[in-house]
Structures are given as structure tokens and as C-alpha cells.
Length: 318
Image 1 (cartoon, rainbow, N blue to C red):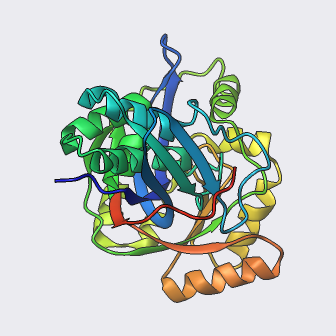
Image 2: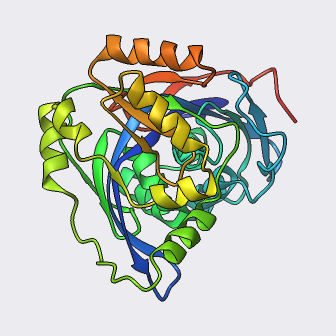
């Protein structure tokens, strides 16, 4: 069977419904206990075969959320590393590819956009090159690329332990509605974790070993009122210290009708839980009226999925 010329894969961004963070470990990481929820804000990666043994990357920005600089378009990009990982695991002697990334998840926004790109590149290159890697092999490669990459492959809702890569899918049969408020700037995840360590210096921080069963029950039941009462993010105090303007937006969201609001991951994107779809739409409109960027989304959303075999993109951003 001949390999398709192009393969497009769509992957979701995520929010952390809960995020408990342990103390700094000797290896420089932090153990976490988190509940991830994939939401309906999707990245797309189109992989197109090249005759040469190189990886080319381009970006498009349909929603105008890309920073003017700071996104690598070379081998340091996580999607490029994902493509190389597929080629190496499959033992491909020549594996050139052009990766076109359509960005919709905020950059450096605490929603795992780069990880979603990497997950999409894994699946797209596996299909493009007929590499034959199994889902388990792709998940193994994902774990080697970053803590959030395995969840971007999986999607849905999951409990994450370790550094977030030990995933267990959890029931979330009911669609929950959220409003996301991206910031016009990013936050560095390492800087946020460093601020957490500084703020907690001298205190006894427990190692997280499980996620809160109350959160799991609220997800399983679709009980938004119960879920609103248990949203937690141990990174939030650090994110608010580094970006104090987020407090004003959090206050605006709850004042305008959100059941609860929380910093997503390391921030600075904010996630507001709404009672239902109509409430989310109204909240997003009210926030926009006050000058905030706001997007109504739902979760859980599906994980990485092949959108279509396509011809090459014609419009690239170099």
C-alpha cells in the first residue's frame, strides 16, 4: 500500500480540572496528581512527504494568537522531535517531512498546545510513512517527548500521576461547558514551577499519590455545582504572582456568572466553568464586552485523530 502524500491530524488542548504538585524532586521534576480534560480547541498538523531527509516546519495562525517570536521552526520544535522519534523507532533510512501546524491553542498558555502538536506529528508521520507503530509504541514515544504529550494522544478525561505521564482514563460521559480566556502573553512553565518552590519554601509539601475522588465523582455525574467547589491548581498562586493582572479577570468571570474559575496548568489561560452551553455562551459574550478575549468550549473532546488525507497546504507562514 502506497503511503499517502499528506496526512492531517487534529489534537485537542487541555485544561487541568485539578492539579496537585509535590515538592521538587532530586531529578528536577515535580510529582503531580492531576485530572486532565481535553477541550474543543484543536491544533492541526498536516504532514507532507518530502523527497529529502529533512524536516520543514511552517505555521498558520487563523485566530491571531501567535507571538511574533519564540516559536522554533527548526529541530527544537516538539513536533519536529516527534517526527524524528517516529523515524528512529521505525528504522526509516529516509524520512523527510513538511509539518504545517495550524495553531489555535494559546502559545505558552498552560493548555499543552506544543504537546498537542507533538502528538499530532506522531500519529501523522506514523500514517504518512506507513511506519506501522502500534498505539502503545506511539504512547511510549509520547512519554519521552513530554509529560502532556501522552494525554494529547489520548484525549477525553484522565487522571495523571508521576510527572503527569502515568495516565488512567476516567469516566466523563457528560459534556461540560467552559469559557477560556487566553492572555496576550505567555508564562514560562519552568518559571512558574520555580515560583511555586519559592512560595512554598520552608513548608512541608506532601507527595501527591492520588487524585481527589470527589472530582472524579463530579466528572462521572456531570455535576457542575460539585465540580465548581473542588477545582484546584497548586500552580495558581505562582501564576498570579508572575501575572497579577489575572486576578482581575478571575474576578470578572465569577462576577459575570461563572460557577468557578481557575488558572489552566501553568497559565496564563484562565478556565471558567459554566452551568451549561447557554451559560457559557452568555459568559463569553459578557467577558468580550468588558474587553477580554473569551472562547466558549466543551470537554471532554476526543484525542488525536486523523482528519483527512490531503494535498499539501498552499499557504505557509515562514
